[in-house]
Image: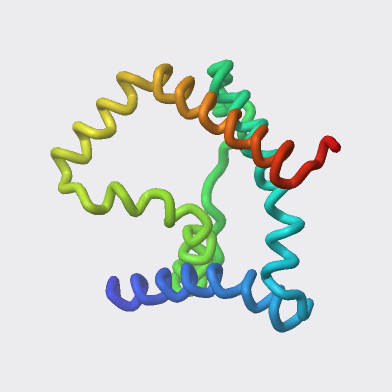
Length: 142
């Protein structure tokens, strides 16, 4: 039973990953190059905003809604939905799957201990990169 639910969750993740490619290439008949040309400046604008949030150490958790994960009533449908939405966030966290439990806890403790320095450094780097791409690559200001 658990293996089958795991497979359903995995199918949900794969479905989520396939939908954007199918949507743009088949239904909209737009090449991914054109999509990237439009989406990249938007993404770097979002990165610019996120960099400011990191630099000024804004606690975004207090502005985000809290709630329970939706349940469909049927375990296989719920598992599929879980996998589908999990597909959106799973990629960046693959790094931590390489660690066993104890080293993973040590890495997380280090990140928590140095949160302000890490956020400030990451925010400054993201800000510089975003401004460079928005001004010199995409030329949105000129």
